[in-house]
Image (cartoon, rainbow, N blue to C red):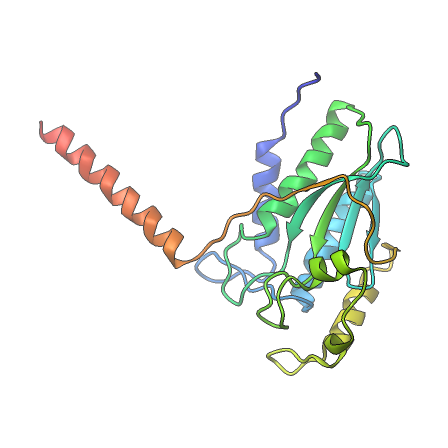
Length: 221
């Protein structure tokens, strides 16, 4: 088996770059689904993919796909990914970690010159968070069903924007992406994900205080 390692420094740098899109003062992001910030992040990722000569696709739900070919292009792809949209005060790693680490896998394979038997695709699902348009997980739901539910056409965002208009604007903002139908066979799907919120933050600080107290006790001994 051929072994290879990802470039952790590159991944961390990418995470920081994407966190600048919709950056909040305390380090989080506000990059809600189908906004200009969401579109900017998609364009940035598509640009990185095209620079590596990967193929870029999107479907009628604006799900974004980045494909690295395999030896046998007739095989269903191994899909890796997550999302780039955020909550109004989301963490910089929630969604973006899964998407950008998936892209790092493709880049690392390319850097190492490793061929895979089947193609690999990075996916960016549309509106996983569901905070601007309900329901959440719209992109993955539509992909699994192979169709966009009729009643979504009349949905409005929390800011009053039309779902239909914002979806069309998002698709149009990435003309370099090839259009493909909704849904297709997938060999398997992998997603790295972290939920960032007050419970996780509180636990981190609790653990840090515990370690610090333990250190002081040892020093006192």
